[in-house]
Amino acid sequence: MIPLVDVKRQLQSIKGMIMYEIEQVLDSGQYIMGSKVKELEKEMARVMGVAEVVAVANGTDALVLTLDAYGIGKGDEVITTPFTFFATAEAVSRVGATPVFVDIDAATYNIDPKKIEEKISPVTKAILPVHLFGQPADMDEIKSIASKYDLLVIEDACQAFGATYKGKRVGSLGDAACFSFFPTKNLGTMGDGGMIATSDPQLAARLRRLRHHGSKKKYYHDSIGYNSRLDELHAAILLVSLTKIDEWNEARRRWAARYKEKLAGAGLTMPVEAADRTHIYHLFCVSSNQRDEVMTRLNQAGIQSGVYYPCPLHLQEVYQNLSYRPGDLPVAEHMASCLFALPMSPFLMESEQDVVINVLMNRGGR
Image (tube, rainbow, N blue to C red):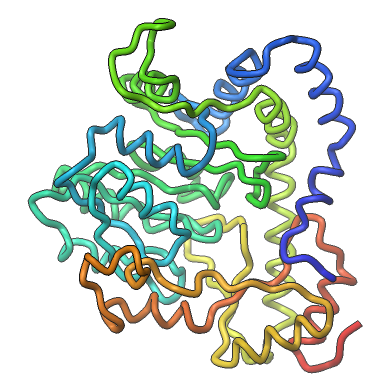
């Protein structure tokens, strides 16, 4: 089976470096919030061009802690996209606020800035754009709206580490940005991990307290916090992977370009890379009105594919109380019916990609 995401090959490529780092952590006796976490935070801040990075246990916690640190909660609204992984809206609900969904742009699959302003209310506190599948959202337009209404902009960059917008890396574009290091992400570890990037030192200080049970001094607590700390082993692995991430992202871009070239005429709608952006293809998603039939053919040829995402968030059962109905956000709903992902990895082999291409072009399989 040609895998949709080949995590194993990516980490095997740096196995020797990882094993060395694991031994260093083992010998150190520091396994939680030690020197590797501090080093990772410092290096991540340098790479992204921000003042502060706060490492946490996972990407969902990054979102929750950021909203909490900003004081967003019951009675507040946060504008976001309905076409993303559930954690984006879940984090808003987890702090007691209400997600307000805005339809997406049909070309980029990201939140449509032209539709944001009409959803702003007196209790709106933030806009939470997602850089979906590795492509940055329209941040200039979003930030202009946020400035007009005095709103925060929190980037959900969990799928987009290393992507750029007008020459700046995602993570440095809003008031704060949240990342996930889940194994399948472009920059992943052998487990869960996450971080928040910001240039606001006061926010960073609040986040550091929140991730450690609301404590600034051991056994003294000035707020109700969380247990959301990054393990030393994961920090060590990420430090190794960080040295390779730009190389890996460029490989993804090359495979994406080859898909687009070779699949011309296959009857599929290819992903669009918007101007002034670097799309790093966490997923390579195409659309087809015969999605089920195409995915069945791929599966029969030993090729994994995946649907992202089959049910937009505004139509999820848990959000029935928000009174959205089918047809309210038609672009997101249409994409949920036709979009699917093809195998994508820095370590995809040309022979494997050729199998995928031949099946999609109805030229047989292997």
